[in-house]
Length: 259
Image (tube, rainbow, N blue to C red; front, side):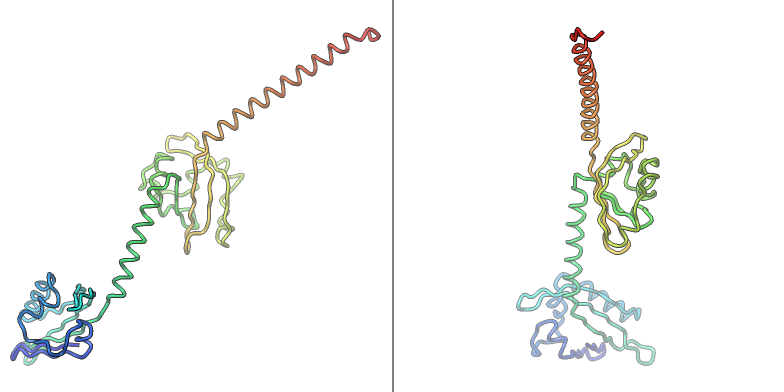
């Protein structure tokens, strides 16, 4: 805690103030350079807040960076209130909180979010996040490119609206299994914005509380190759049947004992 008297310019600091700012009790608290010493580039913010508090009785609440004489960088939250006597502002008082740990945690969270978003957007596979009703909560660029929708368009619809309805009747989305933590692998025929189909191989699982993440890979080319191979196999099988029949007929014709 701290108190600043506007009349005699006296300043009171609690022991914790000295600890937070890393200064010795011999420091001159009445020095006009104290604010600059403690806050460097943030000093004008504090000075302006003091002036508004003195003239307009406006309290302030700032979170600023400070650097101790030993070079430690800290984040502090400073709260100041006017002291009023006989309807006149005679000083100010307030509290300083060392919020370095919280601020650093926030920065780590932001860094993790940035890394997550970077990986999310750079993934070559389509990634989508939905709730347990199938509403899209987030999609990456690969998902938009695969289906031909913008991100905003997808966020206004549901996963069911992007899947072949006939397939959905046969193989509905098993939200019940996902809700109990099961991880599902399946193939789906999804429908692009232009109404053409795209086959995907999807890995789906619960992602955090109340969310589902699905990673889908376009396997249309692979399916087309497999279908072409299947057609070829069928044609070869039919050809083998024909040849086998012709061979057996020829064998019968070569047997003189049979009419």
